[in-house]
Length: 555
Image (cartoon, rainbow, N blue to C red; front, side, top):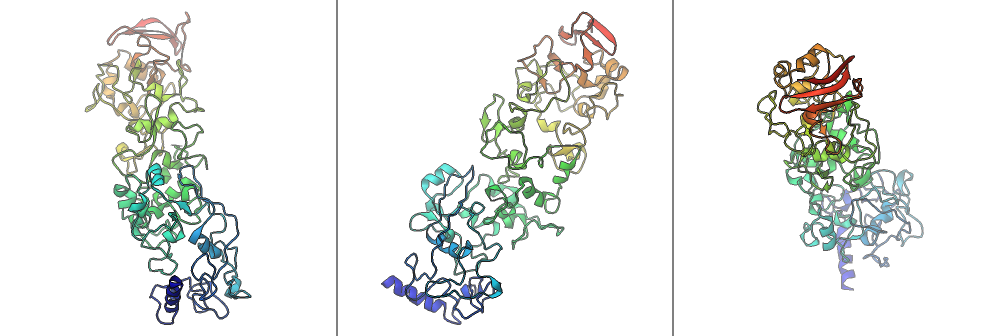
């Protein structure tokens, strides 16, 4: 009885003319009376509070409650990465849905024999941001137990005892609409319990690793006002201020995991098309050679196996937006031994998710004597030969290397596979294998077509690390100049750039990346197709090439 009397006094004062707070109900969209400021309001006389409350005879589901409970069956939020498993709405969330799901007339109250007429024919919640419908799969999950075990299993949630002072669970320990919204106070917009500038509200529960130092948390880049608007329905004007809302919508999200767009790459495009971010990454995906982020939809899943089974590529396969700009690589990968790793240590581990053991690999660009499409096996440190990505190379004497490179140097995939417009290539574009003028996603030109005239640009990729003068002076192989310049034979005819796997080759026949292009090099008249390593700077070949038989051709 004491609680009811207190509530009566409270609502009596709250609804008294002239005594509402400046940002209280009367000045908000929750004032559905004829004098309300919103676009949805009553056409006939009705009090400010009576759309939700009644002084006498209210429903027992809540103090002085004037609305009847919805009876709809809801589709709750679900995600492959969600630990919580919300069911049907309960508690205060069900009260909110009595208006916001659109199944009950706004003017329908238990103390009235007929519903209050609403202006504009909006008897129920009209279409817009406030209408959730009964499909809650595109809304932040509600009505689930927010427990210590949930926070521990999720790994990116605060424990219940560490939640911010404004975010409250209900008496059953469940997170409800009222954990984020206060129906009586619109001081912070959207009836939020506190400001969400800089994701202030989101971060009361969510603690994604790397967020506090990430670019999306720290950058104050603004929209240049070229359409489309990257931040619709937002009052903030910078990346840092929008925070989580750069990518996510709490209600009526179009994409999975509450992403703003149904196409995951479209969420990134909103800023990375040059309208907010300083560099137009998305333009690179229209390049001659690119990672095809727009080719598939709905295939990517953060919970999929580390080794990708269904071919696809999305921005989030290589980038973690929660830690973007962090010095560490915060995305999953595959190690050289083929095991999945949650946080990649090396750049190649990210690449090996798709370019290692995944099925349905694209056919290699160059047909090889020893054919293999698994790059993980090609860059193993124990191979007969390899470009030094997975470990130091096997050749202890490489006179063509340009300083500071030496025989102990380690390189990364991005040293060769990068945008041709990247700063490291002499351009002014972003780094990374987004798109390039040279296939397959090469930072510089690398011709593999036979009978190509040698020039600094023809094999620019090789000459970026290997001195052209040294190669043409035959410092490492007495036949380099004769083959490359005299016979117009591309580097790729003899050399397999990634490496030769120990599962197929050996140190006698496949040192120095030797793995012949069989569209150019064929067996000789004796049926032999081989290179024989005979020691440092010495070897022999048995093969047919450019119409000439090599029978133990030695150098």
